[in-house]
Length: 204
Image (cartoon, rainbow, N blue to C red; front, side, top):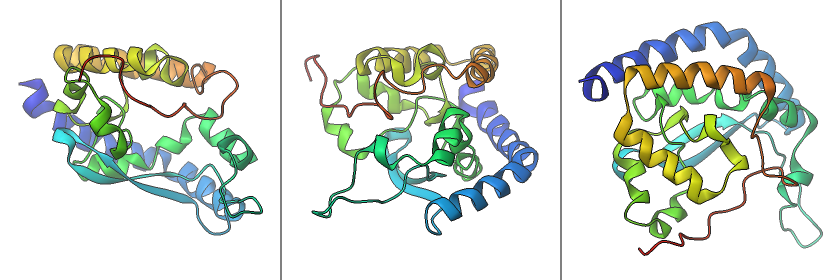
């Protein structure tokens, strides 16, 4: 009953309350990133949601669009701005996704929405992560976030899908708050972002 009905209600009112609480911060961060990213404070990208249905996610844009002499984008680490680094470390870049939650495309808690090009790379077991709405935070995020391997992350995602409950979601919320303050698992060692997923080692 919780997963099918009450979770969506909690998501809607939780996202609405979150936007009201974080409104001043949203304004300040938007202005800062507008200046740092030449008038582009937000980042929009297609991501697969529940049942692999695509939607457009919105996040704060933490990296600029600087390119090399050949016209190719520089590495993520070189494009990460100072304010973008701060926004990423404090997880403020996730706040605009509350809009996706209000629209019913995401949940407050669930597997993180990844890139569409990863869809054909999942094993049948890993595909189960799309049986629920993706979340702003989730079981994988509070158990290592970007510092763990893709295989570990997907195992946590699939476990969450089978164990989803109100008590578990509350636990994830409290652990998330703690993780934000101690800034754990933001990236893999020596990298600004998570390394791209190149396929499962498991049989498709």
